[in-house]
Length: 401
Image 1 (cartoon, rainbow, N blue to C red):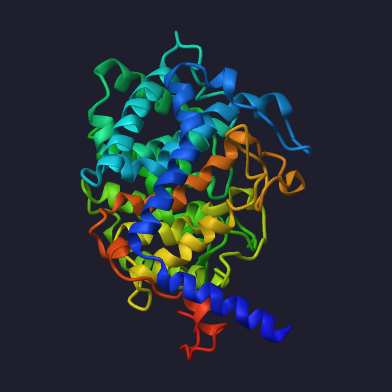
Image 2 (cartoon, rainbow, N blue to C red):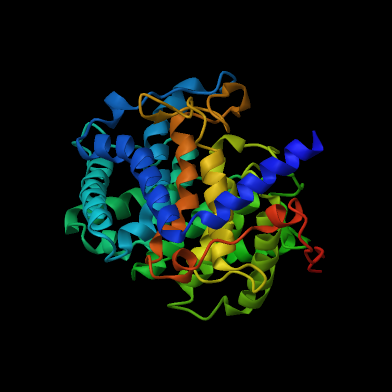
């Protein structure tokens, strides 16, 4: 049995070494197309409410509300992951053609989402969930200035109206305070009046919730889940980057955030097993590859710690992407199913629905780097788990603090 396992690992290793960055990028692009097409094509044609199978958790806490918010969830979460790629220029003829298609879809989708006369008009103020997904839409605009700049004046105003409506939603005392902060960061980045207190609250409170070794508690109690990656690290880093363009008020947090972000990226990379699987712990595990939002974000921003090479991270994330999509039951009639490895609806939390699942798009952030970037250009490298489980000598891991 040991020989068999070792042989499988060697086979995986040889496949990694044979795979070049161009092949990886093409695989990522095809996944982007498969993932995004049903959502953005439907919304662009004002038919998302008709086409989206608004399946909810069997243990849903509020079935009626969860179905209603599914449309904004699917749209905003898809867009926030592909936004850097939409903002990019150039690439192969295939990639340019694909990008133009999705730019057209995105512009029409935003218009329909905020237009009260559209069939797919979305709510931004009923209940609490709209605050969450308004923030994902806000970070999409932050990550893709091209999209914001190409919206017509009326649509821009309707977006602003929608975002302002979320100020009436009281965030849960958890990572939710970052959702309010991100919307204010959007206002700041694009020159609109913004609430500095909501941003200040994010940094002050998460300083209180820092538990050490690159990890924050999500609220007053620590939970072993992936929310440091789903939301906390990417949001803190992006809020700081956006507001720092207009104010130096929060620059004092920069050095701490950098050190903590780099440490958590090291942890994230080591969580990826030699076959691309990872520990299925904590809530929201059905967000699949979004568990590595933070690692993908630092790769996209050229902010990886020095001990993680871009090609190493590319290969690790590619392995995650393949593992979380290889099951034939991952998609049904083109739409994501609830699960981590295919359809596994018992993994759903009370708030999950079909739309929630599209946060997995954030693993695609490095597609915002051109094909000439070292992330894509450099030869394939083994990631830490693959090195260890094929017998390589690897430096031990140590806490940051």
